Length: 123
Image (cartoon, rainbow, N blue to C red; front, side):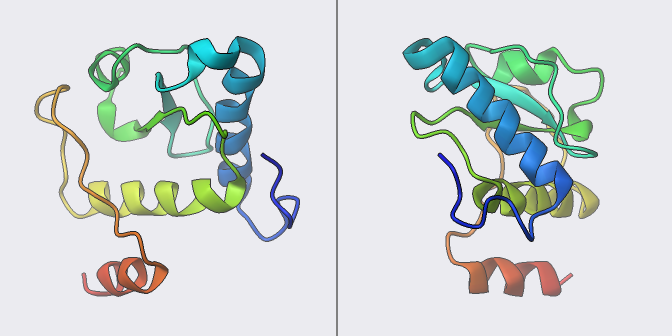
């Protein structure tokens, strides 16, 4: 789970987001896998609740646009993985994306760094 860079060069929000995801993996073990957490876009913090579905996580927030919703992988998360998720979600909300139904999925983030950079420059 530890990133080779030990978090250097990543935003505090990305480090905090990774810590929140990894907390559930370490404390809950396998029962946390593939469950959901709501991560605040402002600082990477969390309400520390595991949700059974993304829709449950969305419904539990006062404003769905303040968070990104992450399924917990068995491998946990590094700040390197968290950073683009935060950036992409902020970008989507800033460019008009809204959750109209909690059961709807999020826009799909490009897998390639170059594609993500191109998309974020195009607005």
